[in-house]
Image 1 (cartoon, protein in one colour):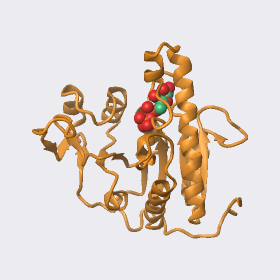
Image 2 (cartoon, protein in one colour):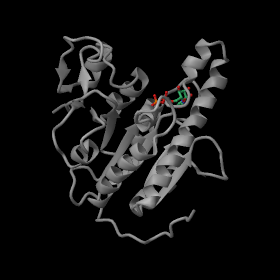
Image 3 (tube, rainbow, N blue to C red):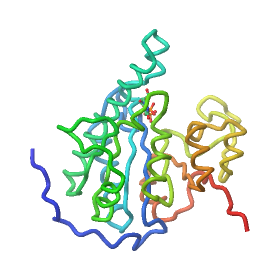
Image 4 (tube, protein in one colour):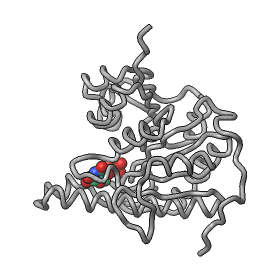
Amino acid sequence: MSVKPDAPEKPAPAGAGSPFPRVLLKLSGESLMGDREYGVDTRTVAAIAREVLDVRNTGTEVAIVVGGGNFYRGMAAAADGMDRATADYAGMLATLLNALALQDALEKLGAQTRVQSAIAVSEVAEPYIRRRAIRHLEKGRVVLFAAGTGNPFFTTDTAAALRALEIGAEAILMAKNGVKGVYDGDPRTEAGAQFIPEISHLEAIERGLRVMDTTALSLCMDNGVPIYVFELADRNIVRVASGDRIGTIVTTPKEA
Ligand code: UDP
């Protein structure tokens, strides 16, 4: 294995070909599974990495929060009788496995990357340091945030909202598995579920729509961060990052 030197590739200046100078991409653990029942599918991860690098090469700075549900979910383990906080810590460690898989795939394609973990794992990843993360992004590196928020009883959706705010991302790109955006029901089980192209944060919370969990949504609402929800397919990460109008936009119009 080789570790990439620091400056082989010069990305375009920040925001050059994109409406967003900096984005936070949220990938669920499931999105890395491909057709497998759990774990990581190498080809799927490679395809996602290709898209991320393509976005980066348009000049958009990309940070990623990756979930861990393909390996472990704290809530499920707690339902089986495990102590919830312990189970959640295990869940956070699962996100680290995914971050490393994605880092590897990105570096194989020539990207510069850093993994920053909210739980200390100094042999494999940097600790999360906000200013340092921003500096990495400015230098064109893709930053992968692992271990969620570092706290049990939270989710990686909340980590995505929190990190997006901390690094000043203009948008959260929320890639979903098998659904094209936000619906008023579950399109996988309810035939009549209606697609919602645009909705406010507040309405999404009040109607209990499954965009992200409520903690994450209210954090985005309070701080005016728009969320672009779209299906992880058809090079949609690149399309959304370049301003194509696909999926659902969750936003709160600014008061005049
Ligand atoms: N988790 C946590 N705190 C966090 C983020 C995640 O305790 O800040 C744990 C929680 O147990 C969760 C697991 O890590 O079930 C995996 O994260 P998540 O379910 O959000 O992953 P995804 O659904 O995106 O794959």
